Length: 258
Image 1 (cartoon, helix red, strand yellow):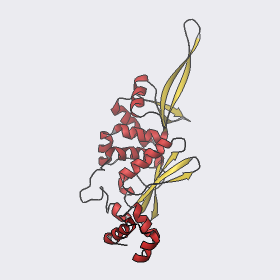
Image 2: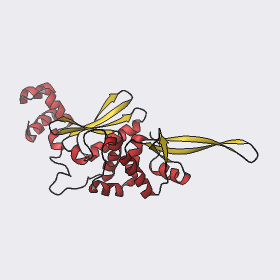
Image 3: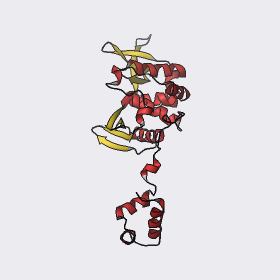
């Protein structure tokens, strides 16, 4: 590890017009190291917090609360935490290739929720947006053994406080993970006997976890969005928003994936 004075000296030599080779020979520092300082002079460890806002002596809330709440919705839908090595967890959220805007929004929220490196891995049909830290476990206490729909999913009081303050971000995150917006249609017979086709927009949310669906529907209730339940194979897995005023609210605050 080179101190700040050494790094500044090497970069100052480059500023005089010396080549990487010349600076490397004069300072004894590898060319690749000097080249990396031209992109980021501070060591990566200086960019990472020594602790997280939840681990502090007095636990705090995230600086960008809306980004965290959106990320929480994504995590509850298509996210997972994996123990990579001792004490270090990798947060991964799978985002379909069809929605490049969603992939960018996920990466942006992940970087704001915890300022660590975020990377993308191409997988069949999707991109895994990932970041590693000892503190992802602190930010997502819902993590545990087994699948989410096989264990209780309950928000901590501080998470509930954030969701109550940013409900639309929570709905948007859940919808972006496990929702879809599409045009439905039906036919009606008029008094004249004529059959007429009607089309209407519907928002769908599907999740196997009763707790996660309840978090979604309770938040819709708080926002004044009317919703209904559709059964699938005998189970109430689908939450539907189809009434015009409620669809208009969803369009204004959530909108289709992009």
